[in-house]
Amino acid sequence: MNIQRVKQLSIIAFLAIAASCKKDDDQPNIPQPIINEPESITSVELHFTAQDGSSTFHADWDDPDGLGGDEPTIESIVLDSGMTYDVEVSFLDRSSGTSEDLTSEIEEEAAEHIVCYSLDASTENVLEIVSTDSDGTYGVGLNSEWQTKDIGSGNLSLTLKHQPDGIKDGTCDPGETDVEVIFPISIQ
Image 1: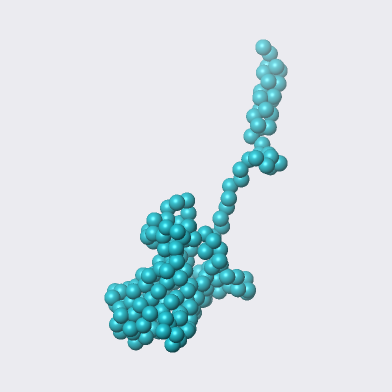
Image 2: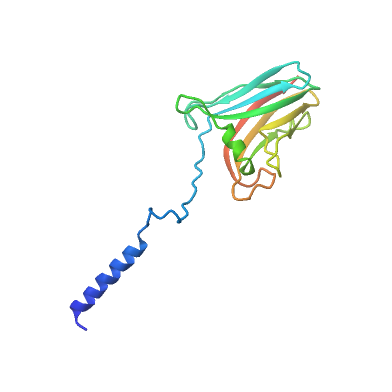
C-alpha cells in the first residue's frame, strides 16, 4: 500500500468519526438536559398573623444588590410571649429593580426544597417553630406555626435549601443553600 492511499484512508476515517460525533439538534427524540438555574434571592419576607387575631405584621431581610455590595437591611422580629403565630415566608428577586416573587416556583418544586429555621442558644427554649405545609412526605416550611413560650432574645437563622434528585430527607443537611439569612428576634 502506498503512502498516498494511507493518507486518503486516514482522511476518510477522520471525516467519518467527525461526522458521527456531530450533535444533531433537529432530532426531537434525543433527550436534552433540564437545566434548573438557581434564582437570585435578594429579599426574604416573613408575614406573621397572631392566631388570636390581635395582630398582623412582617419582618423583612433585603439585599437588592446581592452579596458583596451594600449591607442588607434587616428588620427585627418582635413577638409577644405566650402567643401562637401563623407565619408565611416569601422569597423575592429585586436585583433588576423590579420585584419578582419566587415563592410560587418554590411551592411548585416543593419536593426539592425545604425552609429551615434555627434558633441560637438564647432563644431555642423560648420559641417553637413547626412547618405546617408539606410536599406529601416532608415539611416544606413556607408556612409554619410559631409558639412563644417565654421572654428572650437572640437570632433566628432562616435557610432555603435546594434538595433535588431525591436527596430530600426532611433535614437541612443535604443539598445546596439557595439563601441563608439571620433575623434578630425578641420575645417580650
